[in-house]
Image (tube, rainbow, N blue to C red; front, top):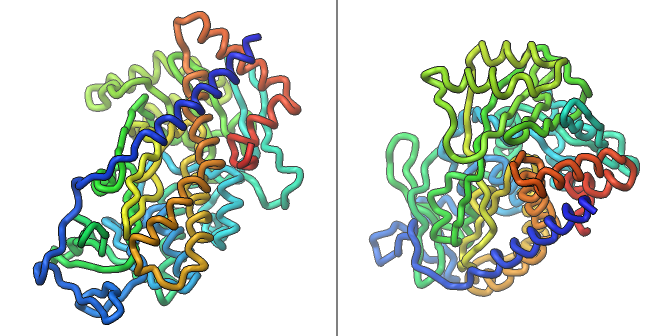
Length: 453
């Protein structure tokens, strides 16, 4: 019966997500919006009411942020003939410890967007499924890829290399302008977002205008408060290490260790490197500076990793390049706003245990692209806003499935003194270990291969 508790848990999580999604219907005058008044903002209105920048650099869409979501969106809209102005705070290669695993469902979206070559020439590794470890036992959970082209699989890589490839691809289009600058506020006129105010790399304060501004400035977004009701939760933190010349027990698989107090992840990010992410519940982690973290990793974590990679793990700890990052989750609770839209982690986050963030973002971009394609004129802000409300419904099959599983599985996979939770954790491991339909069903949901369960 314990396995039924798992599905009851997931069902409850789904219902909770729906309630959270529907709870925000109030409009606001939020932070991060500047009113445009008279000559205080440099803009010109064309005879047909279109917004244009005073320097003549017209755009159909402004994209704030050039991470995975922003870069993919810029390329996608640019390929459809839109004039896109991308403003990114820092165009140097990012160095992050998350955003390194793209599920097969996300890779399919990458193909659909014409961006699959962005995983080439960055030493990306194919991923064919997961290996699950608990109390000395282990099982392999393969992605159900039998009905797909042989190239379809998950991909794991250095996040920064992937983003730079995406940026290069977007900037290669003549109608996409990629600029380094920090957006400080959205510009509003009569309830409609008309553009942005930003500071350039050399410190100049400028404004840019477009009929549609799409905010993709990531998990630390300073603009989201004006476009949604952000309820950010930080259930845990990741401690990141890189293991060198390490051979995982199952090649080309992500490894999930059901450790105490919470899961440990291993997956390849190049031909010679394996990423390790140690989850620590709560918002406080041992200090790296005074050696507490090294002691924690050696005494609490090391003996729980598979013996085949123990030496590599300890060597990585001794090397000392230890990184931490809080894990955030945030339900999508947008304020429909004429002239503006949120995308990516600025809009919606889930626990990164299941590696679903990029898959959700790329799926959202496909949905938005298909909605915008029939529209030649984006200047009617209120009507465009009403039209784009369907985006929030159309994204749900993929987003809600991955979001719900991420939260539910993190709870189930984490250790607990509660007996019922212990039984649920064991039941989940035993159920998935049965293989066949018992594992392919959940894995197809997790991987984005079954977007309409």
